[in-house]
Length: 290
Image (cartoon, rainbow, N blue to C red):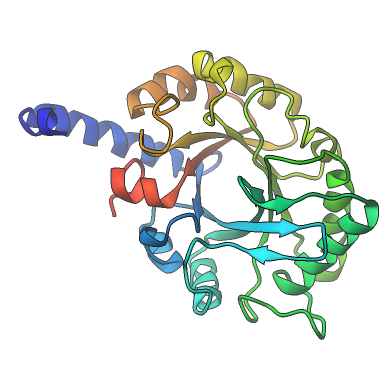
């Protein structure tokens, strides 16, 4: 950063590139920007993330324990009180709010069909439009718009059953439930292959990070396999917002554009960017300016 301060022209060019990139992604049609929130207490509130104007989707992360009779919502020290009001505030601004299940380092798996049904029912009653005596709602009467599958460990079975059960709730809600998946970028991701084969996922956020060197050396080729495999889903390019998050996978904006986006944007099911995560974006101003 010190070298950039000595060269204000470079700073101007970088700012111009970022503004053009963000403007293009925010345009009508493909080009949404999703961000994960809930991984760092110092990232600010959910409301503050929505007030940046940079994101069209915020993904609350994570429901990190399930499948064994215990459910744990891990928001990395954020107080849960007030999140419900923030969800409704974000939605009033036209921002989609999802709850992500899984993550890294949690205690989760689906050992049976019954555990998949139990998890679907829990999500419906605790976070979606349902409600049942004895099942607390951490966010009060606020309803998230859908569920993101970030399955990074454990067995692969029964996530297709979970997806079908959740999708079935659309007949109760009317407007439907958004289902998204966030796989590793090496195609296929066996943990999510059966779930994605249901064809019920609106969006796929392909993680172009996380230690997969095959993807880091051939970013567009790896992403393009996902886009080709799921033409009925909007496929997002998932990137880290700072080298602090993953120095090997971090892409400067110009590298992101010339290495991936100039090709991806031409495909009919390109969806936009998925940013990992709000904390790093706030520190590095990758997409947002605040």
